[in-house]
Amino acid sequence: MIPATPSLSDAGMVFCCMLVLLVPLALAGIALINTGLGRSRSTAQSMLGALGVMAAAAIAYVAVGFACEGSPGMPEHAVMIAGKPWGWLGAGTFFLRHLPLTGSPVSLAVLLQIFGVALAALIPWGAGSDRWRLKAGYASTVLFAAWIYPLFAHWVWGGGWLAQLGVHYGLGRGFMDIAGAGTMQAAGGLTALSIVWIVGARQGKFIANQLPAVFPGHNILYVLFGCCLTLGGWLGLNGAGAMLFAGIAPGGVVLVAVNTVLCASGGLLMALLVTRVRFGKPDASLCANGWVAGLAASSAVCAFVPPVAALLVGMMIGCAVPFLAELLELHCGVDDPTGAIAVHAGGGLWGLLAVGFMGRFGVPAGGQMLAQIAGIATLLGFILPLAYGLNWLLNLIIPYRTDPEGDRAGMDMHELGAGAYPEFVLRGEDFVQR
Amino acid sequence: MRQRAARRFLRAINHLDYDGLNAMKIPGFMLLLAGWGITLAAIVLLPKPVPRCVFMLAGVAVELLGLGLLIRSQYLARQVGL
Image 1 (cartoon, rainbow over the protein chains, first blue to last red):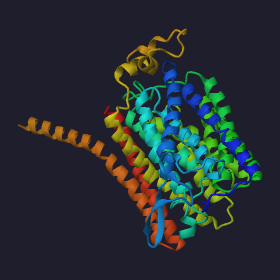
Image 2: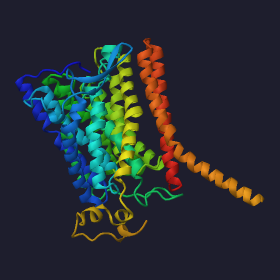
Image 3: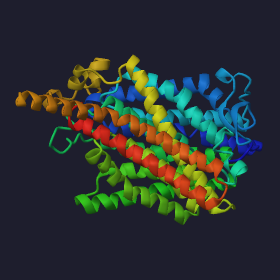
Image 4: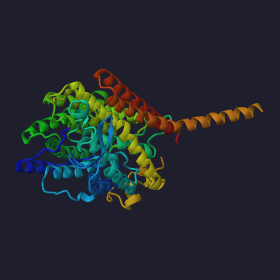
């Protein structure tokens, strides 16, 4: 990664600020996708939870997260290994004290990451929907936004050891993740996996000696409209990330935008094709998953590959996502109602790998590939155990899983006392003990 | 006498199976961390590209083994309703 924060002209600053302000569209999109893919009896809880998760993530990141993350050139904790410094944690001040919020690149990066950490925190919230308590979800979000995300973000964007692999060990330009394919998508997806392991499956999902029960999403319109919103948000996320974390000039955002759209399009069309061939008709929810997976992968590759390669990256993850979602559910016993793990962890990790062998950095490709492998190994080998361990401990204090009454009546009635659709007649089987 | 011994044996087997199931998680996480450690060690200790690459890929393979063990333990736990 770049050793120091790039400087921006006034026009560049305004343009970047406008891009950052598009990112909340991605939050709205992911919240709608999560809600639409969930069951009708947990709709209000899912949407309120999404809002609360965004709020908790923003507060925790501003209060503690950015101090732990830091920025290139700011104080950090480092250990010396074989004579080289390995920055592992930022040493900033809490609540953004001493950081002028005046449109400098660092302040824009803070704003981008307030939205970005909320986006990442929505991923586990979707995976745990329909059985994860509100307060437990908020507590877990605080943990994620204050500690897990900033730790990895420091290593990647704060001048930490992953960013310095190129300078110290000759591995290309160091670990490249320009818009959060690792820090947001893969970290969020792997945290979602640990949450799903902790809260367990929804009641009635897995019955011994039978195929898993199917709980279809209750409103596919939410899901598909959410996909449209995510595109706008991702254009802002990738464009602003490319300017702030990779030093791309404002003109380079055109390539970023083209590649983002191509990745998403390739993902959607391949998911459509695969589901059409396998099931006889396209599956709307899996197509939506392909779209979002393409966007997740684009966050890694969008600034460094030609458009054809971006399309290829999107097509490959779009082809893989239906199989990955099926593998997780049928063969791994993972109950992920929104497919968040396959989409965000799968898409993010694939994008990080793809940029290693398709990216054009002006450095030897082998070294860059090794840097990408180091980042992926860190996500799997450190972030996943960390997320599981911290959430496992938190689960002992605040139980994550709802009680049997919540399983029976749905989270809306159980936690909020009212359903999202009071004028609708609920189906009787929603209340039958499975 | 023989029946009692058989029952005790079956109980022990069940016990082992139950403990084994839960204990699979810990080695799974240990393998994840070990794989990460191998990857980092390869970066620091091996300056030549080929050995470094081989050891880093070996580290990732160890991580995938750990991930597989974790997924398997969760799957088996779900199968027996734990």
